[in-house]
Image 1: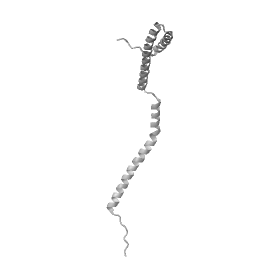
Image 2: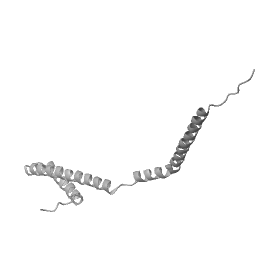
Image 3: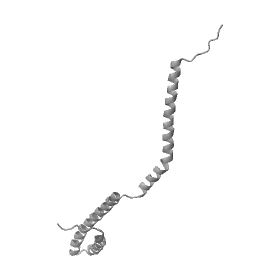
Image 4: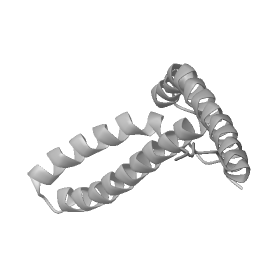
Length: 120
């Protein structure tokens, strides 16, 4: 009896070779991309930390605007309180007179930090 040695099918060998070449090319791209990602990760992380640590001009402007609005609102509240306290003081309420003095002092301390709007 004659042993038949397995002979590779030429079509199968060609498709296996093609598949092997495609896998090698694909994996080499993956490996290269992964190596690139690993190499650039510290730079990207450093840039992100620097971005978090610094305040942009736009962020600073918004924060300043919020703070100015907060001061303006407080000034408005104090002015209303002062008007009521002065009325009560004129009506003879000594405590209202003392509170009016304290409120006026707070207004005078707050005024320099509130920008003045130009008159039209």
